[in-house]
Image (cartoon, rainbow, N blue to C red; front, side, top):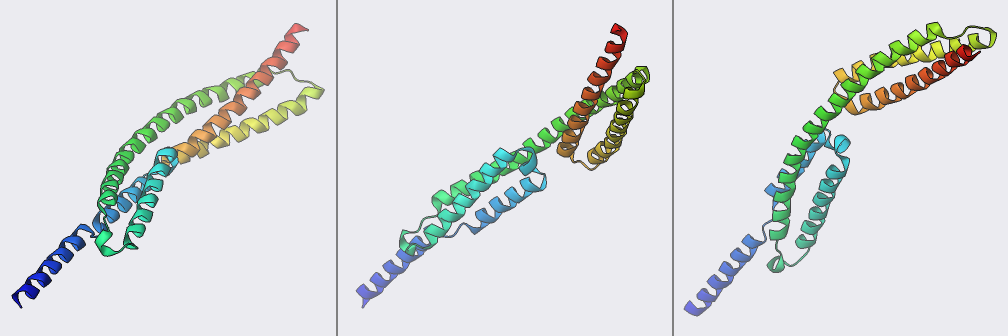
Length: 199
């Protein structure tokens, strides 16, 4: 009787130890998911998409690994590797939040510099427009250029709104497109003025 009780106790102890080793890392999984979501909330997916996607892929891979372990017989289950990976993902996601804020600040500075250049460029184009040759064929071209300048000036307000809303990436795209358009107009006006002077 004592022998049977001892065997049952030994089996029970083994089961407790085996189950303890195979405990689902729910706390770590929740922490990793929350950390990745936090990185997304600061727009890491937009400002550092490669790093964010790699982090998301790692989390998905660990989820698959956990599901695979769950399907095994409880005695052979082990979540040790998954738990370590989840801790690593949490740390990487927290670091990514900091990197995203740094990248945002960098893009904001780039937008401000490009915006200042665009404002100066618009003024240059307006000054050139006054000097541009008038004439029958030139009138329609100048009207078209004036329309383009109006569109570029309207984009200045949009860019300001985007910057105020913290959408620096979209603001950067708009300011670069407007700058390219203004530079093309400037080159066109300079060519037209130079052509008249050569006559």
